[in-house]
Image (cartoon, rainbow, N blue to C red; front, side, top):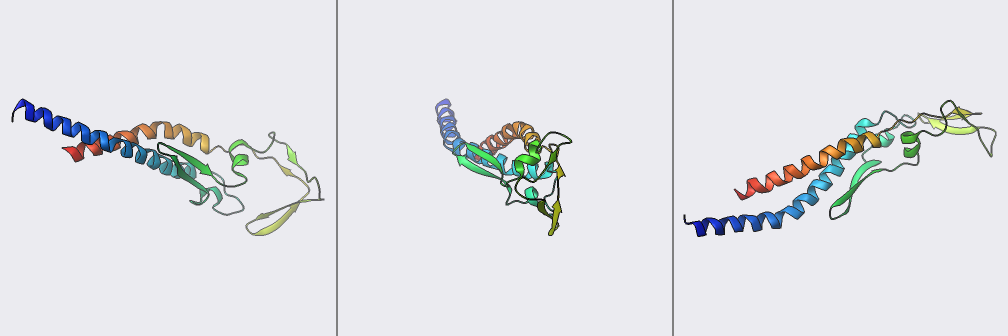
Length: 151
């Protein structure tokens, strides 16, 4: 093969890489968000009222928000309380407009005059730290896949 033919083949391969790379990176971002949701559910050391709560795929999930962006969502009203706690350690929560607090545990109504605050049980912050290393790995996998398809 001549140098000109080799150069032409190389240019064709570079054009093919250039055309495939944006969608591959986009998919790597989406894959990272999906894997992040699994990591977040695995990092969750809390169940709400005996239910799967934040460990449920419908409550903690990743979604694409743009061409090269995605986000991890913990979609419950209490996710922030789990992540950051709901008051000072050892504090108490009292009812404001009623004589007792009412909530459910394992489907049973429970009434209390007060409850202790809960300490933070972070699951999203550790997940973020794991994702920082995961995204470059997923982009590298996408790159390697493109290269293997071209060869």
